[in-house]
Image (cartoon, rainbow, N blue to C red; front, side, top):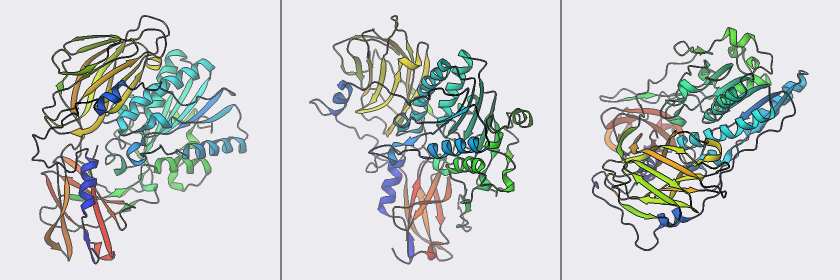
Length: 537
């Protein structure tokens, strides 16, 4: 619509897809059920198809006593459906550090960019964290086996779990190794576990993060100070920082304007600190505090970890939104393997069920598919898995599928024995709908693998109900008043575009009661403007 602003039909679909709900399903369709095809349904084809053995990033080969390792975070599959994008910033930063060390005649360090692109390429950020744990074990073992004496890990977002896992493993097997961890806008997980674990094994850790990073759920999972790091707020230094200032007073209006620093800003901040592209507001923070740049031993002494309640703020940050969107998981539908209807199972291997416990002993392979009861909307499954294989060299791969989609894998080669907890996500499903949950175990060697799966529970996290944008007949100072209708208790991001391709975050809508009204006072500056809402995930 020219000369005004409007919420397009595509916005409704985008909103519903983002929330994980079929946009064609209305909230009144509580009784809607999916009927499985009777002849070799899609889910069964997926379950019986042999998965590939899990592969990991290529670790460095030691050529110096010190290692600087840079790695990336989550690669959202929804934004890269055909193939994952290459995190080229890892190469740029690696080259910058190598150049810095060379120009300053600093020797004894090897700089390496570690990429785990395939395992970071997931639909949900938490699935990337699960894979990051296994990547960290693989990387940590390699570092220990090669005998590095000092390591500086630098990572962004979900890569935090990778370097934390590697750090903890190194400290157990080679406790004299000196380790620094640098976290750039670290993703702590939707359970916030990273807040207490990231940096816990390091000799010193620094964290640089921006405030109100809407790209990853409103910043509620990245704008979280770490208990075992020295925390620095770099929001105000982002040159793209903007205050939308688009919204005027309106009775019942429940929103705030957004002061946004991007999720990638922490990467650029650290890169600037390497190349010297800084202002006085940087105050010596960033790369200059690293081991290889000579920041030790003064940095750990001057900036002790744990400043959670007194985060160091660089520059003059503007007041920003106070977000309400807690995204805690609701868990409440336990799986009983004895009573759950079985859809199918393998003819090979050994399957034992006892209430909430499922035990697999590999044939080639062994798998079980059940039809779980979901009396509420669900979009995640949590469980504990314990490999108990008796033979040396066992290399089992546990795959978990929801309908025809593999939502996660656990590699015995990296995890080893001992119980571990996992949370995997899938597209939100309506209550009382029919779906198939499958577990499959493949051996990948001639040694039998055994896994015990317990405490399997379905749950939900984030917005699981459809939401929409619509126009009203009201106007404020000539601007149309729009309305967001959706699940209450969450913050929804409001984005605008002039071409339906390039979208800009312009506000956060605080939805406290199910309906939020808003107006865009700058809409008259555009011949055409589109809007869409995105929900935390």
